Structure formats: structure tokens, C-alpha cells
Amino acid sequence: MLRIINVVGARPNFIKIAPILNEMARHTDEITPILVNTGQHYDREMVDFFFQDLDIPAPNLNLGVGSGTHAAQTAKVMTAFERVCDDLVPDLILVVGDVNSTLACSLVATKLGIKVAHVESGLRSFDRTMPEEINREVTDLLSDFLFTTSGEAEGNLLKMGIPREKIHFVGNVMIDSLNGHLSQARNRPVLKKLKLDDEEFVLLTLHRPSNVDNSMVLKGLLNVFEQIQHRIKIVFPAHPRTVKNIEKFKLTKKLKSLENLQIISPQGYLDFLSLVDKSKLVLTDSGGLQEETTVLGVPCLTLRSNTERPVTITVGTNILVGLDMDRILLEANKVLDGNPKVGKVPPLWDGYASKRIVDILLREMKS
Ligand code: UD1
Ligand code: UDP
Image (cartoon, rainbow, N blue to C red; front, side):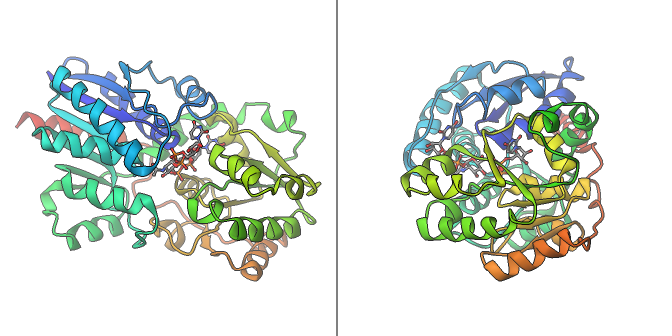
């Protein structure tokens, strides 16, 4: 039996791990899957809603690390996860994405001589001011199995000197979840609840430190949203980091004055997917959302100057607009005037990435 510890901690991790756990559950004669939640995220809206919506089994262990500075949070995960590995003696740990929990657990496992599988490997923004970029680089360097979502990712890994035989282009687990839940999401009454009509609203999410930890940048973005909401309603499920900073920078009054912008709490997976699917346009700095919009054919303007997911631009519906107010307005108006960017679904984003991952692990770990 292969003992695999699957690590989750933050919101996007839950979406990525769900289809992998489902696939592992089909092989219980060969795999003993263990789920460890580091507790990096902890609010009901950021965690519990996802376990419910995605039918994720309760974690075997919750490390309860919570928030902190990068060093404090990473160190807490490492200390707690080392004990877990000592107790459970896994053959492999599987980590997803690029959050601090991903880095911390990879480092611990590698030092204990435990193999590491990294799902969503090889993504690069080439911008180390972005905390995730450091997490991606280090995790990839340490991993034994590097599962990628695109050809560019493979190229980035080869340039780092990673041997080709460790790299496996498998597709996108985020899209496995999307495909598996879209029809359920489409039946949710969330639009009615929020008094929204199909394609008559823009969906906005924002949580990158580069956008929300600086008061001038955040204020500038609110000014752009003010312009856009004169034309179309904006729905804004706000991340807890962003909510805290809006208060800290005393922008609450400004935000409330935008009558056609509706700020709501973070949504569960199904309601959120329903909102993305029915939106006219998405404005975001999220990684996962650039991919989901590409698959759903929804136009996406990414409020960043770079992206680690260039395939969503070259193949999909994504456009990088940075923080240039005129550019954002120009591109938003194009969509609202009926001239959106049309894209295609990238290769292997077909709903079978998790199956490929588990098949490869079974084949290679046994040999
Ligand atoms: C983290 C990830 C980021 C990912 C995002 C997904 C890192 C470095 N960052 O960013 O890559 O895109 O999750 O959402 O790992 N907070 C709460 N409740 C929660 C969680 C967070 O109130 O359940 C607040 C706390 O004030 C906390 C802040 O949000 O200090 C930031 O949380 P943290 O996990 O450090 O980073 P995120 O911005 O959520
Ligand atoms: N998401 C959600 N509810 C929300 C906001 C996001 O269900 O209110 C989902 C959505 O599927 C998105 C995913 O969470 O792709 C990832 O979230 P986030 O933007 O926090 O992380 P990132 O992908 O940027 O790391």
C-alpha cells in the first residue's frame, strides 16, 4: 500500500485536492490517502464551504496554524508537519499550488527523505516580489514528481535544470473540479438571491498583496471600479485580507458610496462558479479565476502586470491590464460594447488531470 499525505491549507488548495482525492478513493486497494489541513485559512467561508460543496472528506489532521508573517506561518507549518511525517511515515506527500503551506510541507518532507509530488508545477510570473513565486521555485526544486498544466510550465522547469523524466504534463485539476460541478453550480439560486440577471454584472475579486496592501494602489483601483459601475453592476465577493485593508486604509465610506457595486462575503465554490459562469466580465487578480474564465469562455481582465498562467492569454480569454486606469477602462468597455476576446480551452484541460496524476504515481512509485 502506498501511503500518501495530501496537503491543503488555503482556499484554492481545496478545489485542487478534491478531484485528486476522488481519484485516489478509486484505488483503495493500492493507496491509503491521508488528508492534512494546515489551517492556513480558517474562516467558514474560506474553508468549510469548500469541504461541503466539493464533498471533501474531513481531514485526518488539522494543524491549526492560522495567519502570521511569512516566516512565522511557514515555520509553524513546518514544525507541526514534521511531527505528522514522523508519526505517519508516508511514502509520498502531495502538495498543490503555491501557497506557504505548499512550500513548508515540501521542505519538511524532502529533509526527511520522503518523496514530494507537486501539482501545478512550473508556473512562473518571474516576479519574486510575489510571495507565491518563491514558493513555486523552491517547491519545484525539491519535488520528485512535477505535474504541469501547460507546455510553458514544462519549459520553465527544463530551464531550471529539472530532469525531463520528473516532469509530467497532465492538465489542470482546477478544471477537473469545474467540469465535475458545473451543472450543479448552474442550478444554484445565487443570482436570484443577489438580484442579478444573466450577463448583466461584472464579477470582481481582489486579494494580491501588490493590489490590496498598498493604500494608494487600492484607492486607484476603487476609482476604476467607480467608473465601471456607472455602466454595469459589479459584484465583489471580498477576500478577508482585502476587507481588513479596506478598513485599515479608511476606504469603507468610499466603497459604500459606489451604489452599483455590491460587496459580499466570500462565496462557496458552487455559488461562486455559478456567478463566474453567468457574468459578463471578470475583473480579478486571482490565479485560479484566470483559468476558470478561460474554460467557461468568460472574458477576464487580470489586474496585474504579469501572470504565471500565460496560456490563459495566448489561448484563453484573459487579458493582462495591469493597473493602468485607462487600459482597464478601455478593455472593460470593449467587452461591455459587445466585443470580447474569444478564446479556446488549452490542451488537456479536459477534466482528467487527476486520473493522469494518480495513474502516474501508481505506476512510478511501484516500480
Ligand atoms: C493566500 C496565499 C495566496 C492565495 C490565497 C488564496 C500565501 C503566501 N498566499 O493568500 O497565494 O492566492 O491565499 O486565497 O500562501 N484571513 C482571514 N481569514 C482566513 C484567512 C485569512 O481573516 O481564513 C486574513 C488574515 O488577516 C490574514 C490575511 O487574511 O493575515 C492573509 O492570509 P494569508 O493566508 O497569509 O494569505 P492570503 O492573502 O489569504
Ligand atoms: N473562489 C470561491 N469563492 C470566492 C472567491 C474565489 O469559490 O469568493 C474560488 C474560485 O474558484 C477561485 C479559487 O477560489 O478560482 C481560488 O481562489 P483565490 O483567488 O483565493 O486563489 P488563487 O487562485 O489566486 O491562489
